[in-house]
Every structure is written in C-alpha cells, then in structure tokens.
Length: 201
Ligand SMILES: O=C(O)c1ccccc1NCC(=O)[C@H](O)[C@H](O)COP(=O)(O)O
View (cartoon, rainbow, N blue to C red):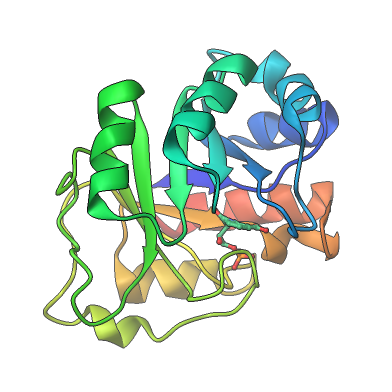
C-alpha cells in the first residue's frame, strides 16, 4: 500500500511523515486552503525530504505553466493537478513536468483510466478536496481504475483499513483525518494512520 500524507506545512510535519513510513508527502499551493503555502514555505517544508519520498506540489486553480514553475522552484518531484483542470491542461503539464498526478472526484463521465492524459497516477477524491468528507466508493463498481490510483476523501486512522478493504486502491491519501485542528497536522495521528494503512494491506 502506497501512503501519501498531504497538506503538510512544516519540515517537522514532513520528518514525522517520513519517519512513520509514508511513501509520499504533499504541500498545497491553493488560495483559500488552510494549508496554503507560498513558494518559500513550500520549499522549506520539503527541503529535507528530497529523495527519501515522493514530494507532491498540489495545486487547484494555478495555471499549468505557473504550477510547473512553482513545482520546479521548490524542488517537488510530482505535480498534482487537483481541481477543474481539463484533459488538455493535464497533457500540457505532462509535457512540461516529468511526473504529473491527476486528482478528480468520480463524476459521470470522469475518465478513470490511469495515464489517460499522460499522468503517472490518478487520485480519486471527494468533490470538495481537503474537506475531510467521505464519498460513496460503491460508485467504483464497474468503474474501478486499474494500476496506480489513490483513494482520498475523509480517510482517517479509524476508517482507513475498511476503506482499503472496500475500495481496494493501490494507495491512500489523507489530510484532514490526521489533523488536530483544520490545517494543523497531528504527529500522533500521522503515525497512527500510516501504521493502520500498512497493517491493512
Ligand atoms: O487540502 C486542501 O486544502 C486542498 C485544497 C485544494 C486542492 C486540494 C487540496 N487537498 C488535496 C489532497 O490531496 C487531500 O489530501 C485530499 O483532498 C484528501 O483530503 P481529506 O479529505 O481532507 O483527507
């Protein structure tokens, strides 16, 4: 099971996630998010992670070329397009940046083929990203992706094992479920989440 802890804001958060055994960490650059980081804070947060785990820059409305520049400037290994990006946006990002992940809610018509637009991985999330809300994964029936796809949306240390059992994802992603307050990561919950996800897989 591949485990990503998202919305980290400090080098300490990142060190704890890596120490707990996470495979990837994410930093957010999205106006209005309680986890929003500017370029300098994002670079500082992931600096010590370089090479140890995948480091994703998550953007929601930033234009693709700007997002690529931001990801390059902070040394992120992955650009996660998380929002209403078009297939053309994802294709452009994949031409400009080596590793791009496409994040989307599962709506009628959503293309669930991993790599459909040149992305390396697919993340299926709740309609409101980073909200801590779960979604009905029975909607995956007959539309389950194959390959490297991550389940996100309202996961936490208590529900991650059953979510893995039901949805059978390649990986999991969490943000709100490992926070003590909105935008504030709990190091204890990060450790618990990783341990429970590992034990379930
Ligand atoms: O976390 C945010 O605030 C955010 C804002 C805008 C775009 C994406 C955002 N988060 C992306 C993530 O990868 C989250 O981990 C994912 O949505 C799951 O969130 P949660 O339900 O809170 O665990």
